[in-house]
Image (tube, rainbow, N blue to C red; front, side):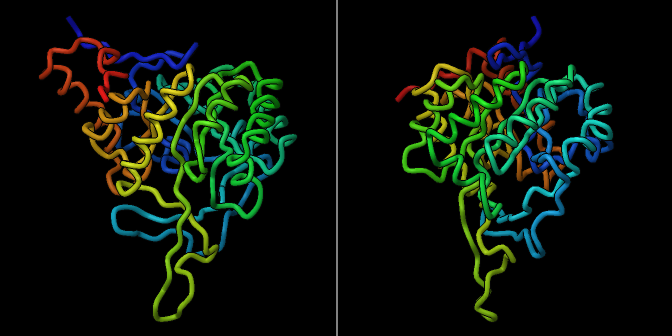
Length: 304
């Protein structure tokens, strides 16, 4: 009997639970010579805005102990160029495409959703209300339950696609935000986005990042992510996608065991472009070693 790695995010079926995280995998084609993209469960593209953006000034990314800080600022081609230039490639893949999108106003989210609604070969949208690396908009929307709910309602009003909402960990109680977006109509939730951080050059006594405030990701954030995902899984009824410091199959299994229906690999893609495939193979090995035929037998089995 073969292994079943299929998982469901509500009305969307993924061929396996291994996805890529937005902002770490470009538009997928950058990795086509390095891995088999068709082997992945899903690809979340880099954060897409209404207009093309050049991003924040340099330097905007540095390595830290156990991770990295970034303040890219949503450098992207904009939604119209994405639809024209990037989507034709992505729609041919077996991996489900999730269009990660962000905006500075509720109304902009609606306009983006309407444009994306015209695409018939995607898994859904990932609504980014949580990034801390822009100077206005996202961080406020992701930390205010009423505003977060308003964004979700606006997106749902303008698209029939699956709506995944990406949450920030930079809040007092993430359960409140999770419940608010669920009640507003979110089909699934992904978390965590980056933790807010900064780094100082002791020689110049200035920030190592031009934008000063940046987002921390990588292995250092994994324990925080696992804890928050466990809390959210026990708060909402919709599927949860786990993100945060995943670089091995063992990491991914922690997220699945506490209840994540799927996982996204982010920072690991920068230093190991084959991380997603290695994680997928590691999950298969774990299942064989433990005589598990269905990955869903692992999901949500944590005993507290």
